[in-house]
Image (tube, rainbow, N blue to C red; front, side):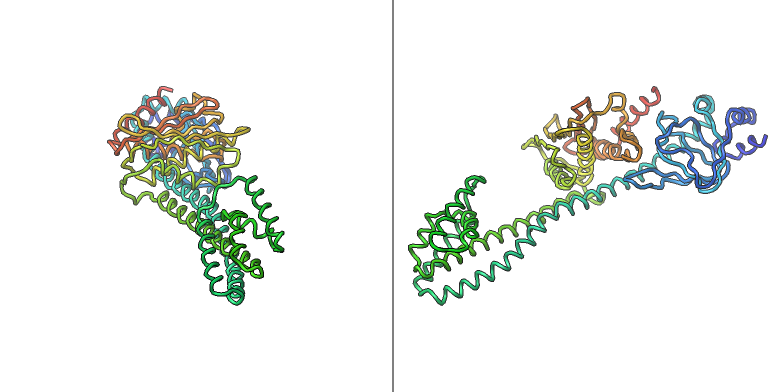
Length: 485
């Protein structure tokens, strides 16, 4: 009788008569959980609907190696209705903040009550709708944090190489300028004005050649360096081995050096060659530093565009460019065993879209593909394809990983559903991608998968259509499929 009285105070059972509530009390059981203990761990099977009679329970979910607090449930609240209806394990972990007492309603009884007690089913569905909104909000914020974390990690990694190269070039440049200044003073004292004019002409010619040096493979470069080193050694230059790479890199062969020799007094030849070598080295270091700074600027620009979410208006978007920006951000995750194949349509039309949100979609799909191919053995292969299709564009991200089992393909876009092990994936990315593509842009996203060939296909209109209506249709179809299952 005590259980009957306690259940009468639970809002979930307000619409039941005393006889029906007494029957419910007889069907269930009681469970006690001490403070600090776990009740239902993420990934474990679910067999009951839980109603809290006493105490508080904190609900958390694993994400990126840490526990994210989703909610705290207190007396009179219930939970586990979502996994029961969807046939999934616990989506999150419950830990008692205080001593807790639960009323456990078996799955079979829970499903029967949904069909015969309208007030009960209405309360369940109403609470589920509220919780789904909360979960979607948490999922969205978490996924955006993940995207920004990905951006920060990728940007830090990608900036490191050009920054280090620029720093090294500037350090070498400082030293080389001092050498150039010293040689210039020596030549100023040793040469007549006529020879100085000739030297200036030779310097201009050397710099002009250095601006557009010929392309050489390793073997050709090595042969030319050996040839120039031998030529310099014959003329008594002690540092010929150091000068030859500079001359070869600037496209200056022995023929040009002979012209320098013919126009220079013998006693000044060594200083003139060292000066010209230092000059072309300075030009090369400036080019290297400029390239590094240019790379940094391009990465910052890509990051600005990539992270332009929420507050950004609808703009014209180059889909190919957005995918390339995403690859730049994710470059640090792509190992040497992963091959990226690009098959972009050069005539792909620009679409009107939310640029930052689409970049989030490309991040989720490419990141999943990287994980899929790295889980396998040998050389992983990812293909990125864009093309026109009807009155819109098609983006396809495919990989040769193990694939998604056919029975799971219909569920990959569900909130918090993941094919990875517990704690290894949040199950947020594809649901977020679904809502961005379908809900915000009126497009379509689907997966076609078999072993060694998994393809995520995103179809986007040239301008967003009635996205909300289309998403409602997709969600209704998905819910009907779940109910029938």
